[in-house]
Amino acid sequence: MPKPTKENWKGAIWVGTALFVENLFFEPLFIITRGFSSDRFWGTGFQMALDIFFITLGVLKYKSAPRWITVTLTIAIPLAFLLLCFLISFYFHTAA
Image 1 (cartoon, rainbow, N blue to C red):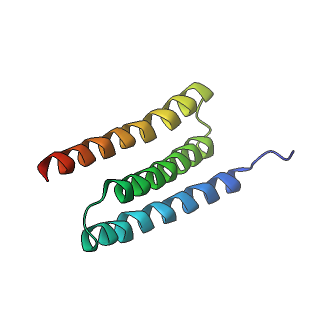
Image 2: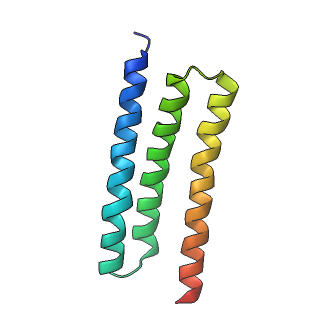
């Protein structure tokens, strides 16, 4: 199996960024115009967490970070984002 090059990791960064921007701008419009739904919000939250995962992994691999930093940050940052999504969803659920 061929080893990914720096250009492959740069591609992962661009794909993750493009998907993140798409979810950041267009998904809230659907949520706002069709009413807040936890299911719709969680779908967007998981998509954005996956985008953040690819961006983080791509950046750390592109910069040749040590493996322990790569594993720790690649897991911790998307989990922190999912926790933020949970708190936002809980706030809007209790406010309604």
